[in-house]
Image (cartoon, rainbow, N blue to C red):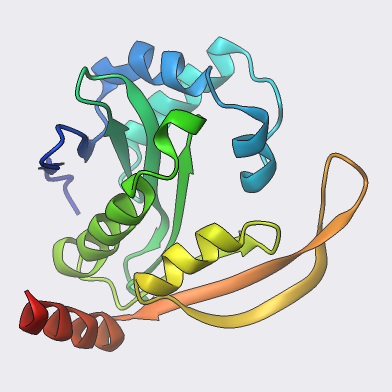
Length: 192
């Protein structure tokens, strides 16, 4: 399916839009601010080389089986990403992930906003039937965001994630189905 450019803007000037190849330097600048807390909550390494990040970003922009969205501040700085990846067009299913690159993006509702818009893109824009994710049990704030967006807890892989400090945490599996999304949208439209 051809990538259709999408862009949403909040009243405060923050934007969520499809990543473009020309965003590569801004993406690196944002990603390079990825703080230890963000890395820990997403299972990322604590350091990446610029060419590693930028070459991966450019491959993602061109990949027809994913949609990478950038979360931008009012001044255009990349604060994070919201991604639909591993799209299986035949089964109409995909994976979802989101990362906020630094503390300035957290506790402002940006993650909830980007999650809901990306979820809507998956069902309304891409015609998917299922959108799934996994979240570490050490990140209950993210699990609450996902539940608010309609994702349902489907299972737990106990002690599946080895953390940098040598301890383990659970990997929580969540998903939302097309019919659940339609019901959520109907209720949301009634209350607005």
